Image: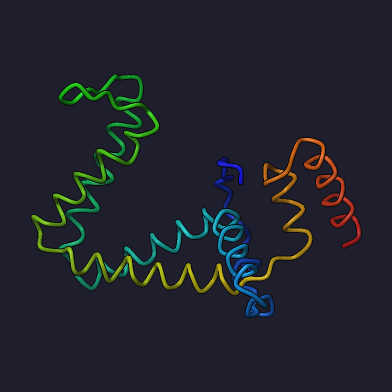
Length: 174
């Protein structure tokens, strides 16, 4: 599987289309759906996590501080100091691993400090259940599969070109 993921927000009508949910026929199909839908809808899942987080903050105000720290540190490291080399005790953080590692540690400390670990576990659990059920049951259309493949899915360059042609043909037929 390709490590590239397109962080594209998919159409919400497509995402929640109730007619496109069906139990997978086998464990292999279930695994494939989880992987493919997890990658295809990653931006939608990020929004769902944000909504779950806001709900969590409304229910347990102690979560506001950890999320605030996470966002602040993330912005400082990845926007204001994006070209600065960060080294801590001989370990150099690359741009890729500092994007979430340092803010994640600050977030964990703030969770502990505000005694909000249990509340965050509820947020994470709610999100995980929603994402798992959606990714497992969501059957994607031929057009969505072709679009994913044409834009960097698990195909070689030649197959990706063919997938792009299929995607265009499907679009023209609608």
